[in-house]
Length: 351
Ligand SMILES: NC(=O)c1ccc[n+]([C@@H]2O[C@H](COP(=O)([O-])OP(=O)(O)OC[C@H]3O[C@@H](n4cnc5c(N)ncnc54)[C@H](O)[C@@H]3O)[C@@H](O)[C@H]2O)c1
Image (cartoon, rainbow, N blue to C red; front, side, top):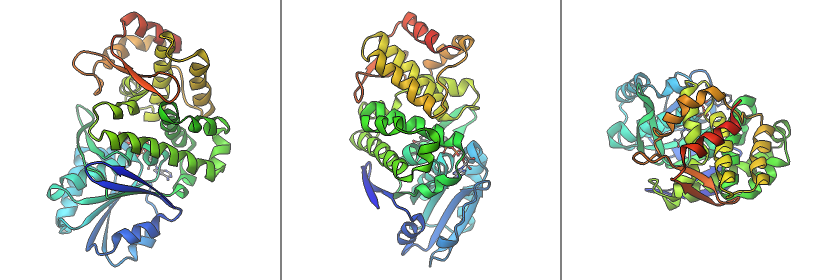
């Protein structure tokens, strides 16, 4: 078992264990009621924790982004009310990022804040969504517009869950892992580069090391800058164009797939300013395609994507700012990019 500590509005452990149920049983000790939120479609086997002394209430919610709808949120609030949840009870989200985002937001809002535990079951959930304290649901005006910073009491990561994850979802998670490698930990790039999607999926030890390293990168950046002013912004590498592509694709692309294209775009911007070498630029393309991630996007979409860049949450005022690499493992931000530079970089990723 490995424990990585995150210092946010409170300090909490990310526990990497090969028995999520025994870690969870320890956390349930002394809790009267526990709300376990899962997706109806994923529906994990919870028999191990249902045997605990706490009253375990299972709340099944719709799968994927539907879990983060206002109607689902209201139904979970109603369930909590009907089951008599009090300030000392616990919420647990077991699932992908959609379920843990919902569970965290439910916990932040019910009675002005209950404790909650994230048990991520997708790779993206393990290395990204469950760590960092951001919780939220979607509004009809966009994704994640309603939310709160509300850190979990613990995150429990067990790589066993990944056995049933689709290749597509595994790859989408790898985009965030590779991003962490580029911004802060070159060893991640070495490990990812020495595998293929199939060999990595078969190698639990290497997968665990990648998760551990990616979580450590996120934990370190979040701990130094919980509410996102400067340091945490490095985590946004690849996300400026990535978010625009996600919106443009009407969320048909996975977040990680859109980020993958965004990483290559940001690398093109940095290479054009000689902040990274052509070899480092090529490494982006090679690693991401190794994990079957897209690295190009429709050339004719640029006219629609360019205006969306200014809508990115990380844009300040009217300035479009990009996190780019200043060599492997170091980031900087560019706020003075001309439309000529933005166009030229897109031309190089256009298909
Ligand atoms: N809070 C944050 O900081 C943060 C960061 C990144 C992403 N997110 C959010 O996370 C969500 C995306 O998360 P995601 O990529 O995990 O997608 P997801 O939660 O939609 O899950 C993807 C699919 O995988 C299934 N699944 C989950 N675990 C499985 C398993 N072990 N085996 C088989 N199938 C499994 C789910 O049922 C779902 O169909 C988005 O809503 C995004 O906004 C939040």
